[in-house]
Image: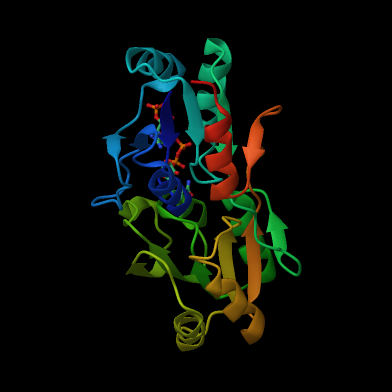
Length: 242
Ligand code: NAP
């Protein structure tokens, strides 16, 4: 058995650590961030070239199963991997951590809808944590934004009034609480990423009465095997033939 582990998440690194060296695993990263946290074992970096490129890569590298532990918002790679595996008749499983409880949050379906809510509610000081590709929708907003990203967006994709914070989680409750207070934040905009590394901002927002605008996850393609924990993903790999 040789498994392709699509990664770029803490869960993918934890799964690689769980399976290595007993299983033959190749982890794959998109190559978006400089100096990424690397999983143990063998790693390849960069896109495959769509569904045909991925199908060829799987064949050329004698892969027998694919575990997709990419971020819940990385919908394109998941759609591609699901299709390539379906076409090849290859076992494929998605590991997605459970979403955060969004009770009390304003639920939206996209960055664009979140920007509409910010305008409609008239928030003037907003904490934006939707990532490098999630700032462009707010470009024309009149609000002021505290924007936290791993790598800075292009200047053209930034709102007029903002302050950029470059950092990478995990984040602690006390620090998130202080950040929201110091910058006098009225609303937090976040994707429903789930996981412990970045959830402290939600607890801090809730306790400070800061409104939360939560972008819902894209839907997974129908009919996939999905698990929510690293242990369940490891068990799935153990069950594969070979
Ligand atoms: P995406 O929109 O779903 O994927 C865009 C393209 O990037 C894919 O078509 C594929 O290129 C390539 N790609 C994505 N993940 C890959 C992987 N693990 N290995 C090889 N190629 C990959 O993905 P995204 O939202 O830009 O996220 C990119 C990576 O960052 C993912 O691996 C994800 O786990 C991680 N990440 C994403 C987020 C987020 O909020 N989206 C947050 C944290 C981490 P080809 O078509 O050329 O194969």
